[in-house]
Image (cartoon, rainbow, N blue to C red; front, side):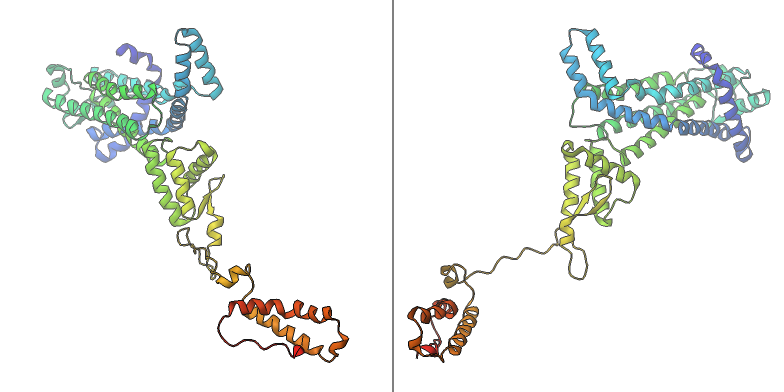
Length: 432
C-alpha cells in the first residue's frame, strides 16, 4: 500500500496544504489539538474534492444511461459473433464510436478521486510514523498526533499493535471499537447506495447483463471496504465514510429529480410532475421542462410511464409542447364558460342531443313545424285575396291552380297531417 501511495506523492503537498488551511480555521473554534479540528479538516477536504468532481459525476450519469440504452445492441453483437472475439470487439468499438459513448466514463469520478485518497493516506501514514510530509511541519505533526476522534488517534489502524496505539496516547480497545463501527458504517452506506441504484433507478423493461454486473457490485464493494478498511488509518476511514455519505445523498437527489427512463423512480417522478403541472397549469422549473421536452421528442418510443404522463395531461385539458412547456389544449379552450372561467376536461359541458321529431315530421321527411306551415298558408291566403278581383272566367284553369300549389297548399297539407285534432283552417276566399 505504501508503494501505491508513493506513486501519488506529487499530489501530497497540495492535499496537506488544503488540510492545514482548514485546520487553521477549525483550530480557532475547537482548539488546534482536538480531533474535531483535524477531523472536520478531512471532511472539508472531501466536500471540496467532491464539489470539483460534480461535472465528472454528471458525465458519469450520462455515460451510465447511454450504456444501459446500448445493452440490447451489445447483446445482439455478442450473440452474432460469439465465436469470433476479434470481430466482436471491433463491432463493439464501432458501436461506441457511432453512439459517442465510452465505457470508462462511468468510472471517471472514482479514477479522479483515487489520487487524493492515496495522497491523504500518505499524509496520515506520515503522522503515524512521526515524519513530516508536505507542508506539515513538526508543530503540526505533534498537534495531529494528539488529535483523537472518540478516543481513537487519526493515524491509528485496526490492525495496530497495543504498543503502537499506546505510543499515540490511546488504548487498543478504543481504537478497534471506533474503527469497527466506522468500517461497518462505510460498508453499509456503500451497500445502500448501490441497492438504491438497482431497485429504483434501473430500467426494469430491459433485462441485460449490465444489470447483473451492477447487482454483483452491490455485494462486492461492501466486502472490499470491510477487508481493506481494517488497514486504513482512522483519518482515511473518516475520509471514505464522508465520501460514501456524499455519494449516497448526491444519488438520492439525482434519482428524485432526474431518474432513469423506465425505472420505478421515473414512475414516481412523473406522478408527482403530473400533479404539479395540473395544479399550476404549467411547468414552473427548468428541469421539469427539460424532462417534458425529452418525453415529447420520443414520440411513439415512449415507455409506459411516459405515455401515462401524457394521457394524464390530456385528461386535465393540457398539452405538452416540443419546447417542454405545457399549454391549455384546444378542447379545454372550447370548454370555457361564457364568463371566461376555464374548465378542465372532466368538467367540460356535455354535447347536446338533437330533439326528437314527431311522427308527422318523420313521415314528411323532416318538414318544418306546423307554425311555419301556417305562416306559409297565411301568406298564400293573402296572395289569393289580392288576386281575387279578376274574374274567374278570365283565368286559365292551370293558372288558377298554380298559385295555390306554390303558396299554401304544401304547407297547409303538411300542417293538417300533423294536426289531427282541433279546429280546421278555413278555405281560401278565392275558392268560395
